[in-house]
Image: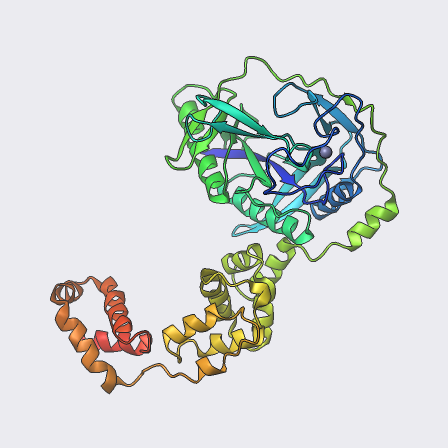
Length: 468
Ligand SMILES: [Zn+2]
């Protein structure tokens, strides 16, 4: 039987507003623990919340980017639970009347566009941060003790819930790359998984391909990169298929994905379903965004990443277009292309050399980069690399680098090639016996010997002819 994965995602995004969701404490990293707090976010009796206007507007802006309907009447609700990262004993969230519902995102993929439904995007406050000390890998189980930092408590948090429309781990990754880039470009969050400003949980089940049924699903948490998310989902899909095919069943469970071992470890199973006793937050009035506000925000939306990938795909291919757009590199590519660089070469230099050198794409003069792209085979490798690494310097000019010529003179290179071949008789024999991959080794040795000044194409031809 062929099986089909059924994947839904829950994404939490911490907004980078100046102040917290319901008080005037600053939002930000790096401050000493428990210094960014006040009676409201520490839940002193009688302290009253006040809604952060920017957080509401940014949630609506994101909802519009995700193709959602924006509610004319939205309500904050109390989600009641007791945990030490939440001093109120409840979280102010949204329940039946969130700001954004019923959205849709089209993700470009090799098999055409994938449509992913957005069930809802709502606004809530983040819990405090807990640090588990001792035990294994910072997990609560087995820890010696735990510390709570309330600086994060009360930070605005948007929760996005997708429909279970995703059919492959790779599509989940693509969707998340686009979503992250959209959030960054809207300027509402840094959306960095390592810092926890973007957090993703995946709900996974499998079913016989083509059937419409929804089988028992499991949840995977604690995945801190897009690659880990894809690997975690793949591991869970395989596990579930094996369970069904061996005549067993899948239990509703929550797993942590351990990237180092590639394995899933179950959390303690819950004894009963959560009952949060939601009710409307009595300290806050409902929010009724005006149509003027919604239309103003809609007019502020830039051209979104998915649209730009579709546009670039006509010039490049899907993979290169995705890498450029998801990396925030496509504007530089367009300018470099417009300045006369060959399009595929420009894409490769930007996505590989420039990113590899850690240069900020926003600081690069496209016209100078275009000159380097065009001259990349003519100038010495070392000069090219140095020029790329210096592109972000103010008043950078490509001209001194372009003035250098790579050594293409066969007569000058021949003795060096011969010396390298003589010094490596084992590799020479292996190459002659069919190990063609060693060509790169010989070229690399010559480049090293010439301190990067040789033209690698000429060296490569020379090595081939000597070993033919
Ligand atoms: Zn506060």
